[in-house]
Length: 387
Image (cartoon, rainbow, N blue to C red; front, side, top):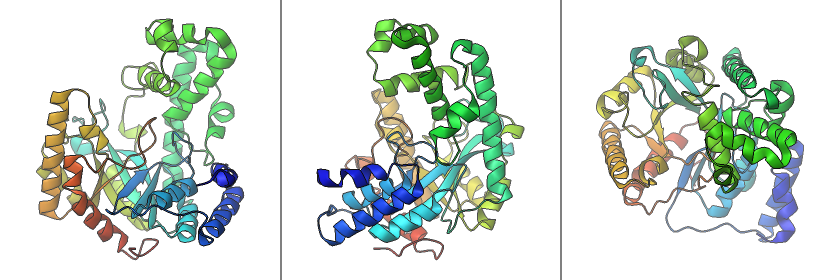
């Protein structure tokens, strides 16, 4: 794409939906004039789990920008999910029709599973908590279900901030003033909270900011100074908000919706309940046959995976174990005809737009991933027919 189209691409990052729509129409015109062309990848590829800036995307990409990238890279299937909201549904539909990309939209949330309340499943260190997705919605919804998801999230966020304001009084922030404006949907995540605290620390400590964070992280100022900003923000999130941190909220039934409730409402709102799988190392995932059987009984119709977490690992023994676990999990899903689709998330700094499908475990299962996606997209619930 030439530099003369930079303004339109940049406008796809604007929080103003009308600016994004105008930019998309300008891009559509240039595509028709063959001034912008997509890639023609010989082997069909897909990414069905990408977060937009309606929750958190580390490149600040909107749904439109994500779908444009799908067009440019020649992806066969694109899927956008955001935490606790389907705010992106209309934009996803609009952009997919403009650019001719098979795209789908949905939400991700964390739920509580009573039957596994003593087991860690796929939310590290949090017994009973499970990442869940609903996909395939045809229109946005302001129903009580989604309002409740956002209210639960809002209460957790406010409690995290309250705890951290007590721990970090010099850089205390305000939820409404400092955090909400960081996302166009008013639906912030932990990473938005961390960004808000970091921005406040820049204002308060200025040139002494690294000294401040070195004390918080128990690292030398040089170590903190030499980190990439994105790595520093991730370390701050893990130190302050994840298990053991001063902002951590211990999982309870009251702080997360029950899986049965979320599945029921996903179907009621016109979506398809989709499970997620991490790496098979926790008690709640280490028996893939029983794990998938339980999920199917609950009404889950497909599973999403984030493959990079299974192979892109420095420790060779950990990598070997997680690759083997992934292979076993996919084989069980194949035997039960459970659709499995991969994604990269892009809500953590550095995650790629497309998985490395040259990795053996992904290359050998790519046909099944594509078959699974085709099964999902063939439903009348979805936006565009298979290309």
